[in-house]
Image 1 (cartoon, rainbow, N blue to C red):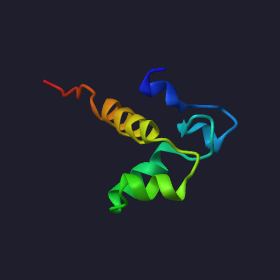
Image 2 (cartoon, helix red, strand yellow; image 1 turned 120 degrees about the vertical axis):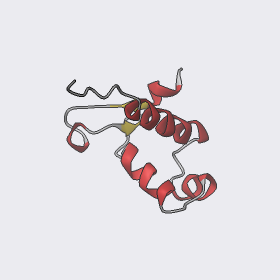
Image 3 (cartoon, helix red, strand yellow; image 1 turned 45 degrees about the horizontal axis):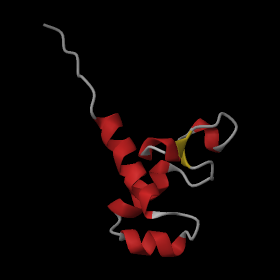
Image 4 (cartoon, rainbow, N blue to C red; image 1 turned 90 degrees about the vertical axis):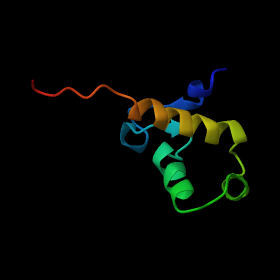
Length: 74
């Protein structure tokens, strides 16, 4: 399983937003926890169904979204 396979998007779940492995925990929820200063260990303790690889997957997913070409008018 690749890391990005841990991120799922289902039309009827969480408004089609990316979630972790079919749960209702959204990628953005984990990113916001990390941005607020939560450690990986704290997140894993609070969400017992998560695995360390899920947090890695969230970060990779966000990195891939942020890496896009910006077109400008010449």
